Image (cartoon, rainbow, N blue to C red; front, side, top):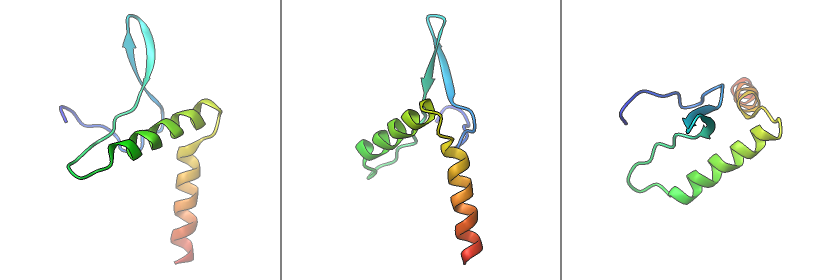
Length: 70
């Protein structure tokens, strides 16, 4: 990639297109990865964020509980 990026950005990424901010998802792809599944996951995450679901916080909480359990 041409620059560094966060794997789990807390704030949604945007890019200005003709002066209008447009949501943006950066999907790192390497050989052998299923691009359709990666794009589907990114779209689902964006839809949940637009509905007000904080996917980042839920992921962190689930990860913390899993680490506590062993």
